[in-house]
Image (tube, rainbow, N blue to C red):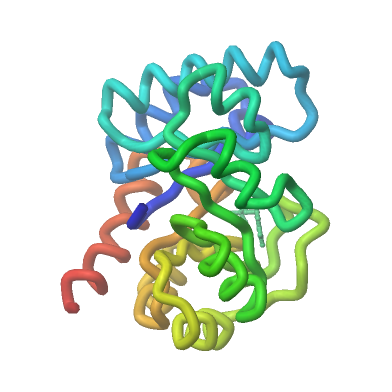
Length: 210
Ligand code: 3NM
């Protein structure tokens, strides 16, 4: 699951725009993986959002991941699940989802990253790279050096998350991340297509340098 621009939903950043329009623009700009992540909504509403995003991502032929909620992931036939450190253990999720689904996990340093690899994760989220207002209970900021350190210890794909803006992307990938994961920088942008394509171009530039 080698994503270059992994875009995560955030209802509060929609500012009256329709989720499906914003996500389509993000994908057209270069997002190559979409994650449904909403904390304060009903299961019914989450299911509706999941169905919608499943349809769009299928049309666009990119992976669709559901945060935390294995029931929703199964119900909408998502491509995988993203787990937090306090969510269901990877081994249990793997048993329930089977060998073909993608399992990602949020990590915040070498120890968690190595444990994720041993447990059979398909990729890790790694962060927070910088301070973010989007998630209030984050672990301490790990910075660019944190990416370098984790890259030395794991071979799993890494998507770097937390406060990532366009101007950070190149440095993040140079430090060893495969790609970046964002909420506000894309979902909250005035011009979602432009924000997404600019971020993707930064990642592509470094990835193609080798
Ligand atoms: N997880 P933004 S930081 C969902 O550090 C999430 O694990 C984080 O939002 C972690 O791109 C974060 O707007 C929020 O900063 C990312």
